[in-house]
Image 1 (cartoon, one colour):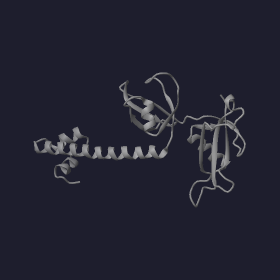
Image 2 (tube, rainbow, N blue to C red):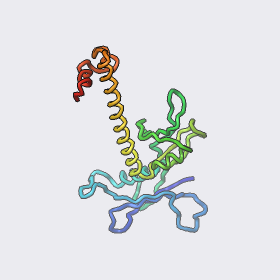
Image 3 (cartoon, rainbow, N blue to C red):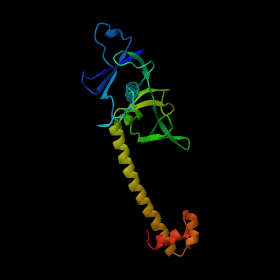
Image 4 (cartoon, one colour):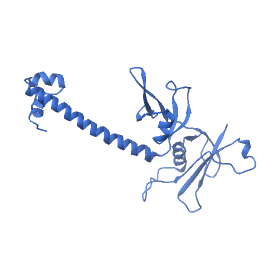
Length: 216
């Protein structure tokens, strides 16, 4: 099935652009106005009172289309339909540990960076949806062997989740640091030398003395 997009100003004096993706060959819509399969409304030139003057309308429309999982396959012209196809900058697959799948879904961008690791309680698709991601399609059948194409349905949800996980990780790192320091302190008090413990702990002997004396 072929798809096209139309970008128009939301209203004659609006600074917002409305982009709608429609099916170009849906027989059910031959006598009616086409129903968009995806749409987005946003500022044509974001940046508040000082928008970036170097962002062209074509670049902005392409960016917004990619936000909802589509990209132009023909030149972008405002007010005129242009061809589009699915854009899949993010992928999700079951994480593995030592070659074995675990109950986590990893989301990566085109650069291979991991954006999130999401616990799977029932199905990966449900876990992704609950974390702000839409599943666009699968590259192969059956988890954990396939890779899913995904797109964020709400970046605010994604960022909020990342913030929550970051704060939790920091708290956990602080707890682990306290455990580590306490173990080293007790080992010194039990008679082990700072040099001996430094080799095991991967720090200097001076650091061992600081931990023993609760300095820094």
